[in-house]
Length: 136
Image (cartoon, rainbow, N blue to C red; front, side, top):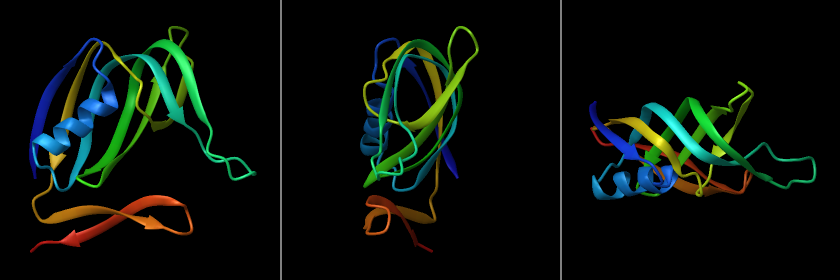
């Protein structure tokens, strides 16, 4: 596994920057190893309701990233975060666009060289789900 370490700056959209790195660096299968820093606001998709809806919460920050993980591919990125506010209350969910960096994020991506990650529609979930192709 190789790695890519970058520093995101204040105001950059966290999710868009990850997707841009995946595209421009030609990452075919990657993971988020570490993301340390903050975001100005959190836009998070949370678990689906009994009605089948997938609600999105928009929370005003600033927030500290307390965890971040994800699988990265040319077909799309699946990223989850947990963030804490100034009172230490935590929120989490699926990272959506619209989360500008607060001060900085130190981002470390792991890049796999023996697999390719694809995202294909899964009729059960209604989402583009992970499919792994071995290249060796």
